Image (cartoon, rainbow, N blue to C red; front, side, top):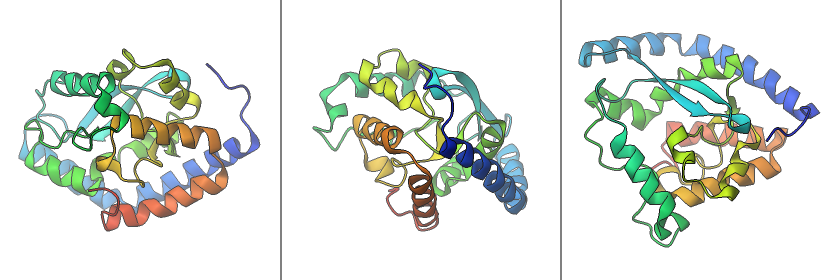
Length: 215
């Protein structure tokens, strides 16, 4: 459901998104080139992975990432895993063993593991930010098959644009259950502001550089 005309801080966030994303693309251009070559040399298939995701108001868009899995990887394994998380009581935080991220996934390539560990696989999403599909800060962009079994209250996370980083990423990331991740996304939707946007961006730098809150 649309939330009406953008508020003033939403327009300010859009200006910051485009400005920062353009600057960062210029800075990381050599890294993008090296990563592109490393993926193409290490395994057959395209260097860029394209996947349908759901953004603000549930609107579909194509997210861009560096490919970290085999080109012929089947998404069924992740789909089944996520459906189990959403359905099970473990998704509600009753167990610390059932986490959102698949800890062991044999679909990931050697280069892909390094890219995921350093978050370099996310760099192409700067283009999604420039296009307006995403913001630098917001909820994680959702895969359509996740929404197939969403409880109604989960859908509040679609109130703002999805982001490259967000409360989930700087608050425990892989140590969070699925429902905890959704709760953090909704917390951001309800309280998002320029101040929160900037605080999350600042927290993302040490989280990425020193892997804080991302184990």
